[in-house]
Image (cartoon, rainbow, N blue to C red; front, side, top):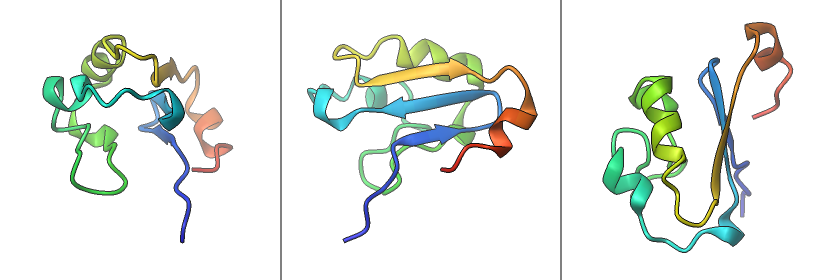
Length: 82
């Protein structure tokens, strides 16, 4: 069975998902279904909305299972193994 990394980036933000903290309230999917998709793997597609909308939705995660960081430079993203 393949394990999926739970770090996603669109070059502007990095979203990290910690499944052990998730309470499955689906606040992310209900609030921004173009990014957080419950029926596919990988379930996070950061190309589905602007970084501003993604950040706003991640902040609404009730369990803290989702977190995000702004990328300071595009060269940093090249070094991330996703």
